[in-house]
Image 1 (tube, one colour):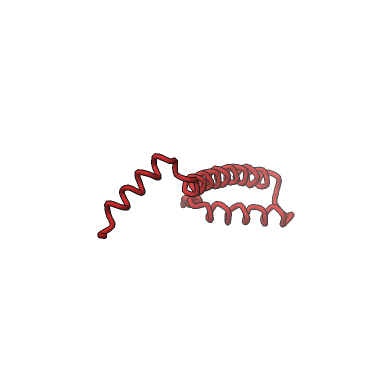
Image 2 (cartoon, rainbow, N blue to C red):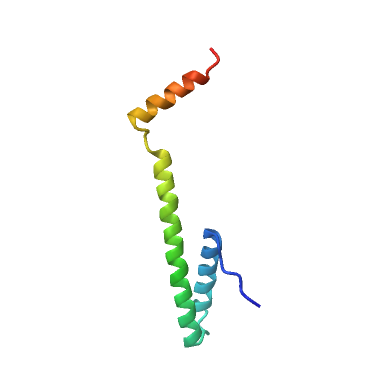
Length: 83
């Protein structure tokens, strides 16, 4: 049976949490601890990339429109108004 890999940010974060709990349990053999550490590092990098992308989208959405774009948007809005 194949294990399903975490896809979403939340799934990745939950898996990292599970890895940390297992490692902190203190009963993990060295080989397993090394595998868990590697998996956690990969997931952490993926989460960082997802957070960077989300921040870029937020920054773009929050940015002030350029003067030309604002004027064009204002003109389009006026064209759509019924009065």
